[in-house]
Every structure is written in C-alpha cells, then in structure tokens.
Image (cartoon, rainbow, N blue to C red; front, side, top):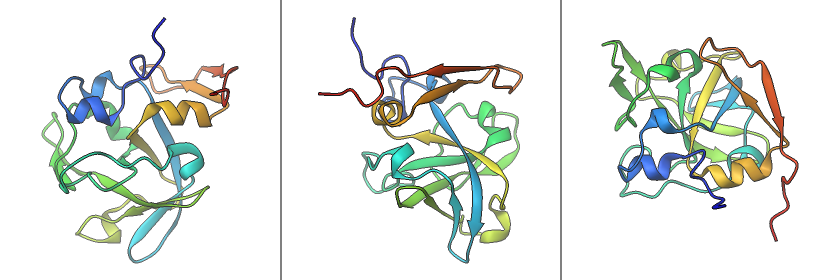
Length: 165
C-alpha cells in the first residue's frame, strides 16, 4: 500500500506535466457568500483548502491557494489555464480565478481584470482545483462522490481523518 495523493492528484502533478486536470479526482465545491470591489468570498478557507500555495515562477496561478472555476464549466477543463481568460475545448471563452487570501472559514478570490461584473455572484457554486490534495482529505470528515450527471448520490466518511502522527 502506497498512501499519498496518487489516487486523487492535484495541481502539483498537473503543473509538472505528469497528470491532467481531468485526472484530478479531488476538487472542492464552494459557494460565493459575499463580494466586494476586489474579491468574491467563498465558504472554503484554510480549514478546507490548506495553506499550501502552488509551486511556480510567478505566472498566473503560482501565488495562490487554488484555481477557481464556475462549477458548471469545470467538467470541460482539460488543461490548467495560464491566464484569467482562456478558451474551453468547446471554443467558449471563460474565466479562471485565483484564491489569493484565506481565513480559517473563507477564501478571498481575486476578480479577473475585467472586474466584479464578470465574477461569480453571491449564491453561485464554484469548483476549486486544489494545490495539495493530501491536507484537503485530512481536513475533511467526508467526501462527496459526484457522478457524470452532476449529482452527489454518495458520501464517503473518512474514518482516519486527522490521524496523522
């Protein structure tokens, strides 16, 4: 048995080219709870995402706690975006966002350069491509299993959550 993030994957193997976004089986679904001139606030903070930032050279997505996508678009994502604005395989233009700040319960997600009007709004659900899946699993009590039709029919209780020694 080799425990680790092999079963889940995360942004690290995607960024170094040994995995793809579609191979990542652990993401976080959050809800936008507030907005201001600079950020939209989500209900997932360091207690869910962990405080691990992505490794990188200062490019888009390098100094953040995860990449945020509109929930209904995430299944189309095949590669990690290199800028706020990018093109889905369908040819549709869309936006990706960076989680820039964390408190324990909330994440501050930077608006794209086009401003708040282009960001998800209060009540919208977003999907976060996490930087490091290991602490995300260790910080949660259960996982939701999402099926191809978008429903969450099953939950898996994590019986060894927080048992690292």
